[in-house]
Length: 257
Ligand SMILES: [Zn+2]
Image 1 (spheres, rainbow, N blue to C red):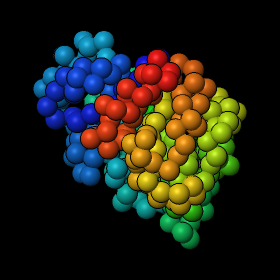
Image 2 (cartoon, rainbow, N blue to C red; image 1 turned 60 degrees about the vertical axis):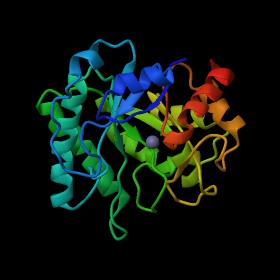
Image 3 (cartoon, rainbow, N blue to C red; image 1 turned 90 degrees about the vertical axis):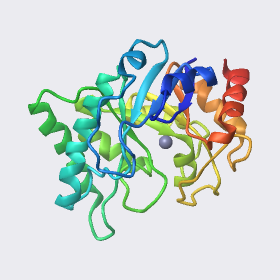
């Protein structure tokens, strides 16, 4: 089983991964709160040559579902640019949050914007790496919080080869039961390409997105272990608070290898 964690992109991401004993690392390619354009990483050759697998998480500003042109247009550009930067690092995918529309907007409009993202990029030869759409925790106008909305999203984007990233904290806080979740999501998407294995600081269906270390959160660790066992060969990435990541990783190694 390939297990690892999100690591800092500045400095030596592979070195951080090695120190943790990770098989896989996740990193940003820009400051995640910014609209910066990705620059080549100084350690590109090392990252690409390393046996540690790499996946890139896109920046938080991105919302390709938005009905606001001034947000959606730069979001489309940022996804393409960050996918290209991910390919430079040899990453196997770019994680993008499902995004949301405003409260007076229809979810289906946001879903159609996701479809347009793929349609337009197809004309340019597609994205440089697979796009992995991640479920999110909050809001009532999210594309990928409730699984019935994910089903509608997948009808629109599944044909384009979109991948799926399952975040356990987001599912729990979003109000989706973790028991049997791997089968339920696979029945919709046909695939899980990556797991973000996180516990939550908040209650089930709270709508809050606050990750916790596995031993400290509100999610029963047995449920988290079950997700890892059920998911087959999809890599597992911890996005838990840095001070407890090594312990979380050791726990997973002991439970699932
Ligand atoms: Zn996540």
